[in-house]
Length: 516
Image 1 (tube, rainbow, N blue to C red):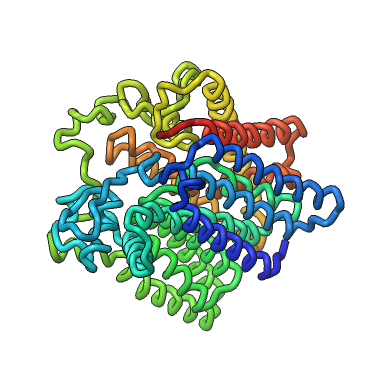
Image 2 (tube, one colour):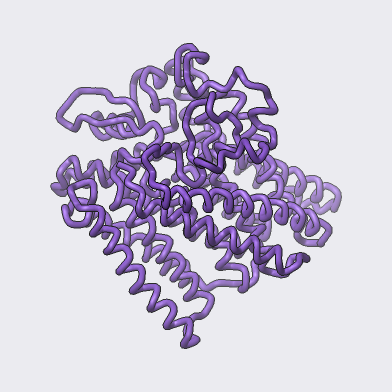
């Protein structure tokens, strides 16, 4: 399906306007939990506003006024609305990974974590001039932290109180998370998704609970995810239309992604594979003009992406002699409760049995002694991040259990269908490069994740935030099921029901679950 540019422009406009509204409401004691708002009226307001817009949506649907493009805009709106309320419900200390702390512009303190890293740049107007491994979190490339520091500075210049300015660190991440919906729409369009399947393909990025949590995060995960998705999208565009401008856009998105977080480089492997396949094709065809353009495009790609993507690594090597990597959570690994190095390979990445899924309490306990299977942790953190709410009531626990089981069912079916359909499509002429890129990006991602949990043997290494981009491929699998994949109707019913239960039940948990 070919969408008009107006859909994309309107989608971005919706996101930006709602994010600016959040920046205003964050400092209001009647609308922001972080600044004194009562949670119960907040929930009531969310219900009222959601029902109002849901009523408008249903009315338009019944009257037949909803084109596919209007449905897309509604989905972008509702996805951003969920993120908006999550940010207003929760402050910058809630469900963060390595969040850290701040002491303010007027102090000379150097604080740890992503907030401390952002504060350092905001306070001292330059990148850290000490060894980045001396303070936890500073080893990350600085793009996200620079953007947030500039945002803090802009707020301070217009008179925003500093505490509110730091609370508003969630505004850029809300924009990034919402823009992921738009970029996924581009990916679906490049994958030639039908009109019937396009809204299904957007659903996971619009409403998945971890995308909502990432909207309120203050670390670099969500910007890295956005740039990784952009890299996938721009590579698909280049496969369709090979040109210098498209190769430049791939290089910039991958390069800036690596300057946000190094694991964005995982996409480089599938890009290299596609480049190699196309080069071999050019040589076999014997077309010297195409071969010349191919080589020049690859050289241009390397000239841009290598210095840009490796700039922070090179800086640390030259100034401090530090190689890229992640510092261990404890000086002596075996002293960390998260350390998984003492367990067998199968117990870490093997297929868990029913008894090992921990359906009775589907939350991540951090301790490796409790749970150390990466796939179990992946699903637990995919829904509820690294939270262990021992005080959760039985009603919400039941919703959490339903969402957890449903998410496993949905992920397994959609992933299997994805691989079956895209391997089958490889035989079709004109789609081989695209299919190769899409399939091997997912394969390399799974391999990278599996290797990562052994290179850094801690339960936190199994967090879903390292695999959030897998939603691209499960979404494509979900689309195939809607578009007439050769399956019985009961499989389609099971998959759709599982997806709905995952998204609805997890949303109920977050709505009534007091995370503070």
